[in-house]
Amino acid sequence: MAAIMAADRGLLQWRATNSLGDSGLAEQAVQETFLRAWKACRTFDDRAGSVRAWLLAIQRNLVIDIARSRAIRPGDTHWDEIDDMMSHTHKIADFTNALAESWYVEELLDRLPASQREAVALVVVADRPYQDVATELGVPVGTLKSRVHYGLRTLRGQLAVIDAA
Image (cartoon, rainbow, N blue to C red):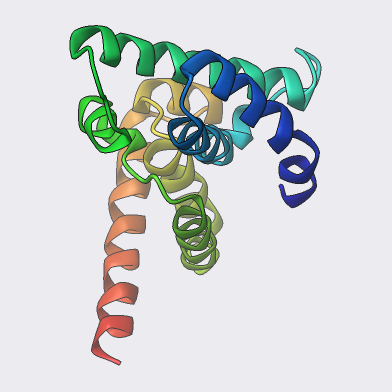
């Protein structure tokens, strides 16, 4: 991810600045682009195109969201206002915090049995529907729901132990 950021950050910054006309807002858009890419990296398919093209598509959608927000509330629209209008899944504006949290989540998930880890990662972390994941894994929806339930229960227990320490 660091290599991709180093290679494509300048291009993304330039395009966001040109599209938005505000360097500060453009920087926030670049950070949000990398955050969305990080969250969706498991869905990336290099057969569909390059990482750069994928990042540009993510950024294009983000810039469209920002433009729509500005159209609703014309004038001096700041990132905080845009962030409030965007969906809950894109709330974290600071990429470094999100990256650290994702590593922490990955470490916690590694402590689960493989079936529960896979279920939690696909349903909760990747935010995919139970039916789609159950079909993909070849298990009944009820089995998948049980795996997610017990996986989350185990994770909550691990977090309680960490918080108590």
